[in-house]
Amino acid sequence: MTRAFEGRTVLVTGGAQGIGRGIVEAFAREGARVAVADLRADVAREWLADDGLHRAYDVDLAERGQIDALVAQVEADFGGLDVLVHNAAYFPLTAFAAITPDVLERTLAVNLSALFWLAQAATPAFSRQGGGRLLVTSSVTGPRVAYPGLAHYAASKAGVNGFIRAAALELAPLRITVNGVEPGMIRTPAMENLGDAALNERIAGAVPLGRLGEPADIAAAMIFLASPGAGYVTGQTIVVDGGATLPEAGVAVLG
Image 1 (cartoon, one colour):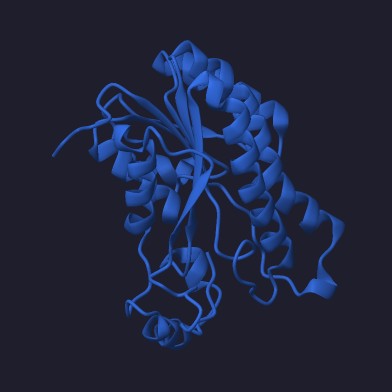
Image 2 (spheres, helix red, strand yellow):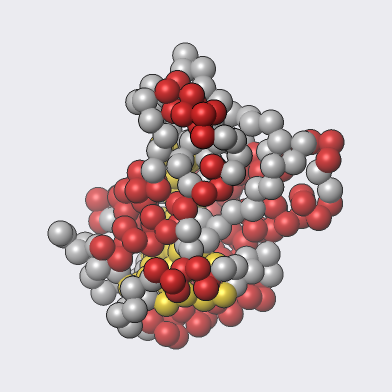
C-alpha cells in the first residue's frame, strides 16, 4: 500500500454511504485523515474506523451557515484541510410536471449552491496549507445525457460542470485545482431504488464494459485527481461510466 495521503486531511460530503463511502474508504486506505459530512452522520459512525483519525459531522448541505461552521470545525479538529470532495447530492425521481419549488430549491441548494459555499469556506484553509484540491462528484446526467424524472438534477449537474471550469480559472493562482468525476450507472442503494434488479441487470448488460460501476471505480478517479500526479490538471471532469455514453452505446445512464 502506498499510503500516498499520509498526514493529509480530506473532507467528503455525503460520505455516509454509496459513492461517498467508497471515496472515504479509498482515502482512508491511502493514509488520509477523513472528515465525513452527512445529513445522516450516524450511518457513517456505524462503519467509520474508530481510530481517532476520522470523524463524522452532522450537516445539512442546504444550509450555508452549517457549511461555514463545518469547514471551520474540520480545520480546527484536524489542523488543516488539504482535499475537499463535494459528493452530497439530492435527486428525488420526479416527473418534470410534478417538480415543486421545494424540490427544485433543495436540489439546487445541495448539489450546486453548496459547492459555491464549500469552495468559499475552504479557500482560506487551503491557502494556509499552500494550496489544495477541490473535487466534485458531478454526473453524466445533465452534462451529457438525460434521464426521465431528473430534469432538476440534470440542471444542477450541468451547473456543477460550469462551476468546475470557472472556479479552476479563478483559484489557480492560489495553487488550488478544481476537478470533477462524472459517474454513470453505479451500483449504490440510491440507484437500486430507481428500478428492480432485473432492469438494473439489463442496463448492466448494455454497458460496453458489461457491468454496473462500483463506488470504488469513482473513488479511484478521485484519488488520482487528488494525487501529485494530477497536479497539472484543473478545470476538468473524468467520465467513469463503462463506455455507456459513447455515441453508439445506446444505454440510458444515471450518475
